[in-house]
Picture 1 (cartoon, rainbow, N blue to C red):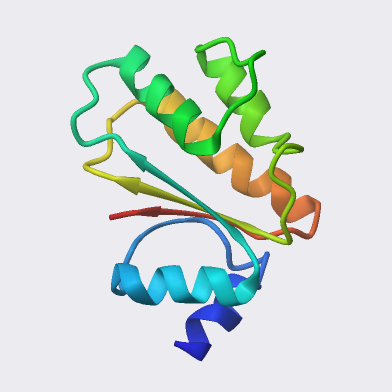
Picture 2 (cartoon, rainbow, N blue to C red):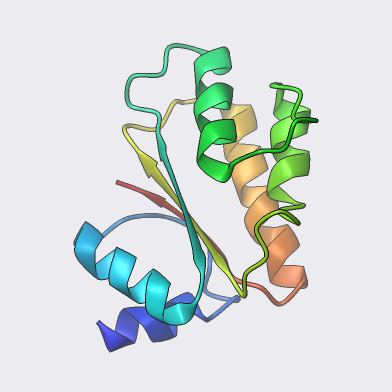
Length: 124
């Protein structure tokens, strides 16, 4: 498990991946790294609105969150309400197939990489 904690701290290695360890190992490593873990269950989401609502709930989005793709991108690039040395977004359920969501997730990882802060997105 120490290896996972070490890997999580690598901003250059952060990206969008399929989870390949147990949830317990992930939770433990995130906690030891001092990161914030957001968990969103998009498995039962039907359409854009439900995906956005679940993502907003998971990241504890502020009141200004507009429940549109731009608001999600803005919120994931801000996170001032949840300061941490790094972040992990665990998405439970199959990928939604939304190209715009893919673009937002990729841009989020890249934005935080430039800030030298790891942001991992894991599908479980």
